[in-house]
Length: 310
Image (cartoon, rainbow, N blue to C red):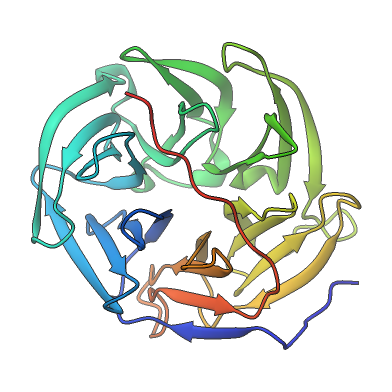
């Protein structure tokens, strides 16, 4: 049985309410949490020291689905923009970010999809997945998405027939060549081995969210892991973050969040022991849906998030 341990605290942070908050990334250098609002769209930065959130638009973007830090370029970021991956420039304060260049474009044949979650692995490689545009019908009834690895200006397919490509994390420092991945419609967390080129092998189910074989009433969304290798899975429709023990592969803690659509999670803070949680107000959910939250008192630490090698 999962514990509903009440020793943790959940605090709402000062930030704009998002339509679809996603993709939190903690930047140790600036002591900031970067994240996105996919549907506004906007890139955001929560400044830990100031306890304030800055937001910027990107001209021409219909969606911004993830944001990644870049090695050696503190004011440049890689984002999923519509169905392409672009490098942008933002000072973290102004109300507009600017395009630098397109890194990869899926092209007209993939105009019916957009990027969703994306993250950088321990080797500095970007993995990012797609999903069918929400306007084109039931996302769970189709499998138009794919999971890619970026290399030298191209997106190399790692997995096909994906409904909603979502959470990504790696089992480091124990085994950085083991990756966990979520396709929301599959209702599970998959594990892969990663070969020397970065390609995914040996797909297995690490954790199944079904309850006695039945749909649990919510789906897995974004994901991170702590320094001990345990997984933290956001639940869209579940009002909680699930902590899954790496060793037993069982649910050990449910972290209750006062928003139904919990989208993603990332550890951060000066001691890397605070869990930041993004949420969505999709469907005109009342506040505090769409707010940014911070969970303290979990008694664990996260790992520094990686920057992309460009």
